[in-house]
Every structure is written in structure tokens, then in C-alpha cells.
Image (cartoon, rainbow over all chains, first blue to last red):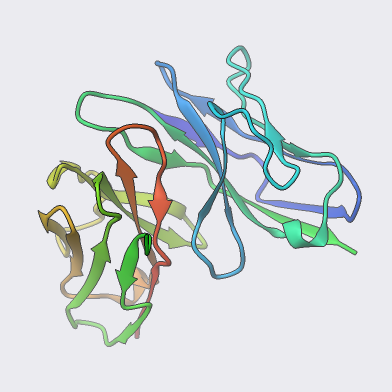
Length: 111
Length: 113
């Protein structure tokens, strides 16, 4: 079974402050981890994939297999970062793979 | 590429009526997913198809829900009869054969009154 946990439903920070959105997962194999962002009433957009190891909009995330975590970080939050953030895991099987989401964290960046 | 296209964008219907949601995946993508998003339960996977074949429908809440994928470019999610608790945003996503690039549609906001 694959499971994703985001312990914080709500996170509020001030503009310019560092932000970390936590994500933990459980999966018996080698998962692919993602972060998706959803701005108000819009579609989910891919923010990061762990295999690409890139930084998007100043966000980074490192896969820690020992701690089974994939926390999302940004050193200086901006007001436009306010959105819902979902951590997601994709397993792999011969018949295809499903994308399992965490519960989501609503980030609010205050001026 | 127009991305994953869902219709309608909004649907308001009365309890007991049949509702059909539609999805056109990205051309060349061979996997298609239906998700439901609510405030209480977040994003739930309802069903997914691989090469037009349903692989896992364990997330379909009740027999009132059914999904089909008659060909590689079209899928429907049907609720019959609809109930107020079905009110949610329903997202469709597709994914190519190689890589893990899931792309989501804009969603259908369903309100059952």
C-alpha cells in the first residue's frame, strides 16, 4: 500500500520568512515523489518531481529515503506562494501506476 | 497541446438526476485518472485506466458511480442517481507511457441540490 501524510493542514508565514511544508510517505518499493500546487479554484499544477532535482519558483524538495520524507522548502516566501500544496507519490507496477495524494497543506503568506 | 480537457466546468443538478462528466486526455497519454476533491477528504482517486482498461476502481464510492473509457481519447464518469453528498470538484488527469508526467484538467465543479 502507498500512503502520503502531510501533518499540517494549515501553515501561515510572513513574507520573506522561510517556509517548509512537511511530507512523509510509506511505500515498499522505490517511489516517485511530487509536489503539486493548486491556486484558488484552479487546476493542480506540477511544482516539483524528485527525479528532476530542480528548483521551481524558488522551491526545492529533497527525497530522504531514510526518513521517508519529501519536505518542500523555500528560503523566502512570497505572497503569491499562497496556495494549497499537495505531496504525491507514484508507485510502479506492470499494469500502470496510481498517484496517491496527501491531505494537502494550505499555505498563507501574510504581507 | 490543449492539455486535459474536462466538461462541463460547472454542473448544478437536482438530487436523483443522472450526471455525466467528460474528459479528453492528452493525445498519446495511455493512463487516465479520475479524482474527487472535497474539503473534508481532500483528493481521492476514484478509478484509473491503463490503455483504456480499468485497473483499479476501488475508490469508486458506490454502485451509483460508473466510469468508462471507450477509446484512448475519451472517458466519462457517470453518477446515477446523484445525491447532495456527491457535490465536489472532479478532476481528470492523464499520464504518458514513459515518465511520470501527470497532467490535470481544470476540473468539473458539481453541485447536487
